[in-house]
Image (cartoon, rainbow, N blue to C red):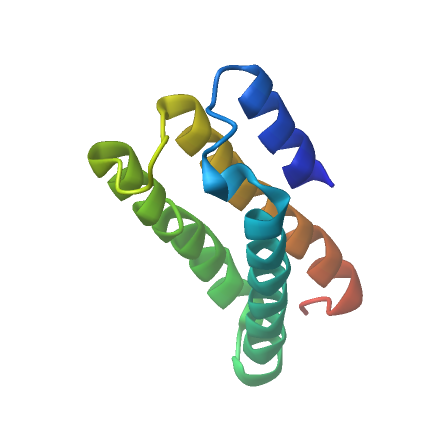
Length: 113
């Protein structure tokens, strides 16, 4: 829902409505799969690392920054039609939403010692 709001605000703020990644049928599955993979990774680190808290304190920020690489490439090259700064910023913000939700939920469902 939050990512839908972000996409709607981006379109209202000047992003082209034809920019496919801001369509719910595109970002919806990416949001769900991204959440599922990140939560699974959290649980794997939690169960296998000797110091899972320390590992997650490094991996979560590093992977978050790495998730901006495709956005940066898109901004620089425009390889998806109708891309713009507003549209790409919305995608980057969507990544942060997924990270925040994963951390919030995972800390409660699979707390780290």
